[in-house]
Length: 295
Image (cartoon, helix red, strand yellow):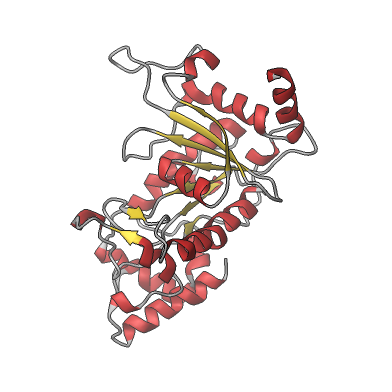
């Protein structure tokens, strides 16, 4: 992860020298080329805002989980533009040190703290933001996530490689150390990462991860009869997808999508289902048993 300290230091120095923000790509050119905003200002990337490749401490002694999202969301000019409070803090100490201590804007910390409650419930760790690492597919800010043109013949291959090496490989390495990856009792248990957007599911599948199961409110209740209902008495619109990295280290990704743009984590009523999915797919022994039983 240290490479990002050098990249962000270079970004600060390039803008100090007057380089136009659109030219300060600091090693992210593949995803910048693949970014598509559809002409919508809300989906336009703010290239004057400090990029955020991850938040949290990847080396934390008691890490609950790593959680993948889409991108850091709306930018805060007073904090993230050149001369901003966070930019100056990073200039003095480096991104890794600032991110590890969660010395970030209040809004950023609060957003991730809401999501930290999910793996905390699953692992029994305190529900504090310091118990997670958050990562995004794209480190640049925008009000809404646009699209990554991963199918494009010209820009897609480089973007896929960037995601594979810069995001997913790092997430797997961090996730392997997490408490969530140690829940399964089998010695052959697989590392686990979490994600909170169907866009992450699509990116994982595009880089080669295999879909093992996908449950939503139509087929989920047959597996989980206590599927929660909303205020209208209808089954909650929530999707869970389990994917497997098809090479060592064989890693399970559990993607939960809320059906909207909020990236809200699943509530406690879904914890039983999540734990069941992790037990069923968290090691090759259990997976083989499922295949045998199904056959």
